[in-house]
Image (cartoon, rainbow, N blue to C red; front, top):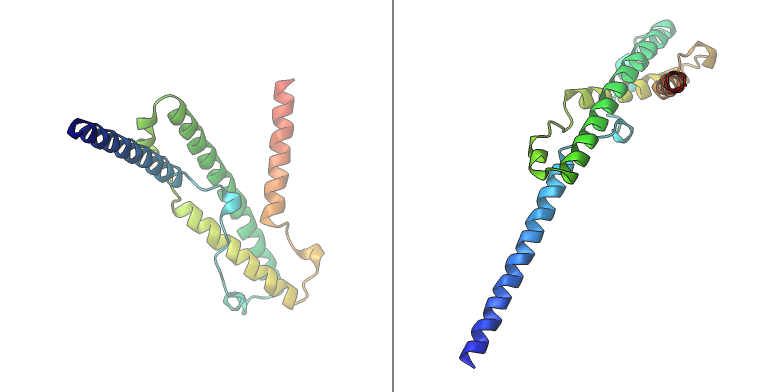
Length: 163
């Protein structure tokens, strides 16, 4: 009877140690996933008050929208490349050598914060343009449109290279 109790206790200890190992493994994988760069499509705009631009005339609003849109598109591509690179490293690390995942650079750096700020600035400028009834024909393309245009030209160039 005493021997059976010791076997049951050993089995229970082994069971709990196995559960702890699985929990630690899951926690480490989730923490590594959190360290990857965020997809720029999922970065929310920071709030910027339209009052920031209240002293701008219509031409200045249009020029600022153009500048913010172009810089947003540049940052979008930079962040997208970083996200894809981190995703590739994560896949290789999970499949081949998981300790290498501890060395992922990843994470959202100052570029992601600037991208969120620029998205907020563009929204503030767009709000001000609507309030001042600036014609749509005067407004530059939105950052989303610029990104779509660049993506379509890049995919067309890739298709030409494949042929």
